[in-house]
Image (tube, rainbow, N blue to C red; front, side):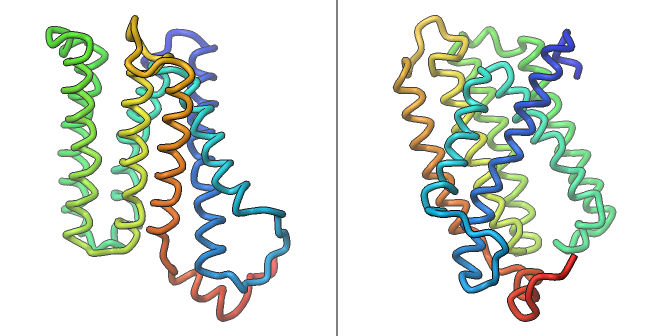
Length: 231
């Protein structure tokens, strides 16, 4: 809540972060259609091949329309929250020891926190409006990508590979948000409405990347063999 001085700003951030969580819905449903086409489904939406990617595009645009200040804060929240997953019981799934997960989390938090704090404290302003963003976003993008690459080379777990669409999405979202019509530039590099169109197309590309990175998990294999559990 630190970057937001008002209750309105806090609630707006919370709402947009919730929408960010909706991104996975279309991807997951489409992936299940691909990986388990014959599974019995209680609900079969018509024209799912249209509505699933459309839901991703709509959620993406809702996030984009919140503007750069919220987009930057949302991605910062996603970045800073990532080590919490590694520190929990899930670490054993990707073959990380407790010591390795703690070291990873500390190094990751120190680097990412310094970069994010540096942006809010205007450490990069001497590089100019475009230059400061280029340096900041390049570094913050490397943090996301290199951390996943480290986990991939260490574990070779398909979960890590399947998650690579997230930093790709974050990098593109930040770039378009900053240089588009809702960004801080007095003269946007991508003016309205082309920034909307551009991000919608890029979102669709990321959507299909995410779907194609999906794989048959142990839980899904069990469901395919035994059916859905009765609740």
